Image (tube, rainbow, N blue to C red; front, side):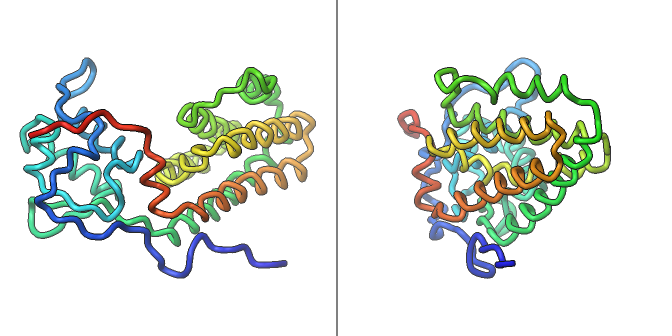
Length: 265
């Protein structure tokens, strides 16, 4: 069997050149200057959500460095809630703390790391579909089809929405397999690959293919054809891997949606 291609050469990393810490980060913060304290969340939680969204949308690019005071000024908050958010994001693996206690770097994307996670994803999902074909989960599968098995004229084309539905689809398949430890591992895996997985839905061609592929997977699962379903889901994940393989950091930055005018200090 021909070995599958890697996303990149061994230990290659995507990273922008080091930016000076004195460069204001406003252009990368979509919500700069907005007031925090929304209902249902603390100020620190709001800062965390805003920063994480900017990282995921590549408004704060991999490899870029920031100092706390600049971030606090751009976000319109004190350094106390900001530090809480930064430490949580560092714990989750999205930031590195550098040069003492006041400077942070968005973690460069190590594509070999994501290769390993995608291998694990394939193994879990193939196992899940084999289990599903021996269970009576027709109603749940039909419910998934309400989004994916629609006429082309009714398909959703918004990449972010499709990405969310894609996560829901695959997580539901694993959940329906009935193994709680498998689901726990898959939830953790999903969180880790989300930052790169969403890139599969910036291209209209890939969005259209996602509808076709999900519909075919559901068809095989409803027919309880385990081998065919496993083959399709493996091909589906590999197609996603191939798409991501061809995305450079330059394209990742350009993939971010248009931003509001940067806040001036």
